[in-house]
View (cartoon, rainbow, N blue to C red):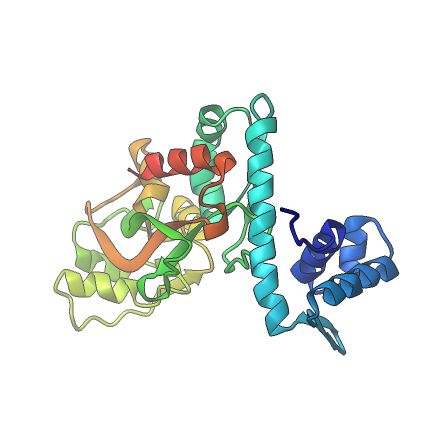
Length: 295
């Protein structure tokens, strides 16, 4: 039976235009003129008897029908790509784009980069660094690792890797200002370092160890955990950093956990893979290897 399919070239143009919400960008990506893109969109709309885009002052937006169609077309193209790779990538390096937060990129990936490549060989790994939420229908990212608060987890794309446990760390430098730490109360005289989106970390720690009415103001907050860790290494103060990001430095004696304590938070680290890429052959080895690191 003959399939009732729209022109495949029009579908390709539609996918690229919807992905970028721009005729001009789609034209550049496809190496054609803007007029050629517009023509293919008109052909597809005529075939479907439906309007796919609305014209706006600042560009174009998908209509509701266009959005629904795009989501299914996008998944169909992903399936075609996956099926093609099964046949063509047996002896070729896989191309995988991994998106990590800046702290994971600097403190975690550097320790596991070679392991990922060797275990998933042949592999060409592209690494992006961001904390932003990913628009999976428009992004080229294949896998992401994100730290997310319990109430904000998107279970449609997220697989739990590890709950966040923050380790108390201080410098091992003899000249550091945080050397005399024999009890939790000694921390009150130190510079306390944390990150912006964990504002009550130190209060939670003090409450956990029975210091319910403490007053402290000597706090420095950074945007990322890697900045906290570097500040601690330089002897600026004491910090709270995810244990899996700093345990190697503690084991090597570059940092110390002076009171052998840590604190649980309401955050966790998740491996994010969208539903339309869950069955991708090219991602399976990478996913399994990353999961094994945290097991």
